[in-house]
Image (cartoon, rainbow, N blue to C red):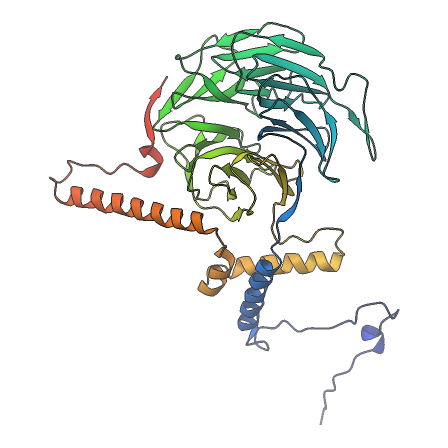
Length: 451
């Protein structure tokens, strides 16, 4: 008679050093592990609960401005640097890691409305309501500190123009930059007059953004509720759409540079394909007041918005609802938001004179992770995604605490939308068949497209 004996060498499970992890052997045969799905479900549930328990997104505030923070700009050459401009004309360069002011750029007599830096990060361009465009030399970051050059606080050039400016943006790989005001002006670093000007209508342009994929294409929004596309190789604007409400800000998707998202006054954001402007690709709804600013993550998979309702939300690029909402008791109306250049942090500037630093993933563990910890986080994320469709996991993952005014405003907004939908259904039911057509939400806010 044969007798089968389970045996193994002591070398297989003996630790070489006392600090080593104990080796554990598991048999993953599904016939032997009949409870595997149940165990994984409990793990997904626990991972979702731990995710919410450790969700502490707020890192710190950076104070120093004496008036509302009106605009911000990233330094593409340096990960830790960010520029901010306020309504009293003060411009500051911040070191995000230490949360302190590195350099100030005084000179503007009115509100600073636009900040951008050149592609190499050496020149900062600012514009404001004092009808001037100023070029500044940015101090060069070294290992620990910034090397402040002698003329860092004095502008390299001051260009005075006929009207106030509302926004500025630099070409992604060139020497041109665009300013928005009574018209769209294209400037060169070395010219005191605009190289070219574009005008379509009489209303002022309030935001401008160059496309990251095609350096000669840019999009603007104006106070006449229009979104316009321009091509610098043409002598006239290319095309525009007129919406029912004004668009406050525009941002292009860096990974899909034919698509851009517009932050609108009607509490929604609209993603468009620049080749097909007659309908939105996606409508992002959750805010309860006007969306003031928008910025895409460098990964192109999500974007952050700041709103007049005193909250910041992070949306997936193709999702209708936000995955995250950030708020604090002291934060007032949010006028500008930016993703950091490594997509790990979000910076917001608000009416209460502060810049605030947030984690892009609320429960992310800061600091250096051991390989074992990293694998554990990846496993928990994967198992949470696998079971996220189940009701209990879905409820925990989606739940967010909202301030009472925003909770009530959201409930009221839902009631109004439901009432409008019911009214439309009844009107259609009591009309002749085919006389009333339902316009989809992606087309409803667009009045017309002009070529």
